[in-house]
Amino acid sequence: MIQTNSNALEETQMLGEYDFSIGERGKYYQAYQNNNLSSLPGVQFLRDHHQRRTGVLLDLQEHQSLWNEVIKDNSALDQLQFLMDHQGHYLAVILNFKEHLSLWQTIYDRLITR
Image 1 (cartoon, rainbow, N blue to C red):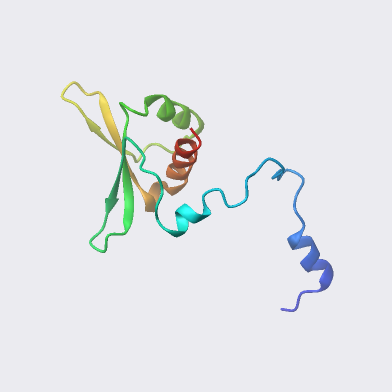
Image 2: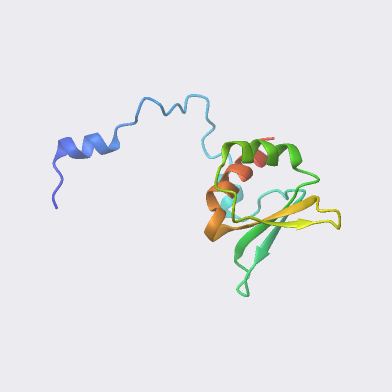
């Protein structure tokens, strides 16, 4: 399919709701490139046999207030797995990236901006 110039312009125009005026270009780019992100206290990555990150274990004792913020905005929490103590209190949540990637991205974004 051949695009006309008017279609190409429409696809590349920035919508009004995107405001990058206060953004910092490349703020995390170098860290991502080197896989050298700062360590995140209370976060343990789960890896497969190829050492690829497949999930995360989030310590709820350390990140309870963040977790409360996130679950308030997210309704798809029915398939989460938790680690609990003997009294039934949640200690940690396990997020599988295949199933909960958007939830993890929300948490991660809030963690790195603190």
